[in-house]
Length: 380
Image (tube, rainbow, N blue to C red; front, side, top):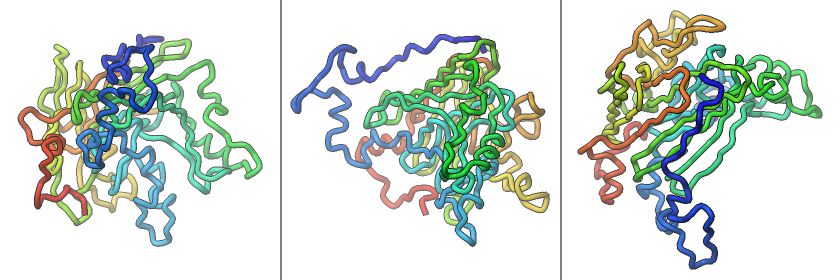
């Protein structure tokens, strides 16, 4: 990508949303708090504006929520090195992720600098036994802004241009004792000369369930460097555990093409209803399933539930390679995880909203009509 692509001039800002001028302030108990204040006042937990928000975990691997070990060692049962290939049961993780309040449908960002051996899909950190001061995340990000109803949110993530030093961070921290300071990402030299991308992720709602995701990447280094921005839409795996076998689906309705007309993805869930993801431009579409790659993790004797498991989108060749889908082509219907890849972008925009004419969960909440006997898919 170019050295410094221009930042997006955002369509909606918190001050505009509040109905205030940028230099205007309101104080006092009787001050008009604007539309956001009206939405927040006495807002119930199941209010429509709370249906979509930043509820996705920053780390689902190594948690007690996913621990089914015999000895209760959550860190070892599902470590970071398995997170890219192993389906979670009770939640998902990602970078500046957005999901519904039940954690069924997720929209998050992955990145690739053509040097890492995996996509950057989640924060990396040391476990309680690896860090000299206990568990310790080894990333840099800054929440920049947000509103209480999640009608607006913004986060900045700093992504190195060189290969991420996973092994170096673990090995050096292992040599340090409790009295030593922690060995951080900046200490590795990977960010020297500002050789990193500043990636800003913004969520803006036009209505309770109509969300615009905007990603802006800026090369802060002295030289051009490659970057793939890969927003991903997927369903949490609620169907593989023997409690609820209903399986949601993602279908590519429009693939964009050379005319740059954009990509449209239809998402169907028996509880949430029908949603549509629209992506501007012509990103490369790759479809897989949110299933564990048991063969890769546990050997040839294991069985994969899908020929296109969670890690089907991976790098081929090291240290530089081509991003593709296994086994060399993408599957365009019936999947449960869908990445949209762009190389050398300055900005990407995706809109997630109810399908036209559909009966989505958000619209049901706005009508204050709750499904009677229907139960949330995978809620058991």
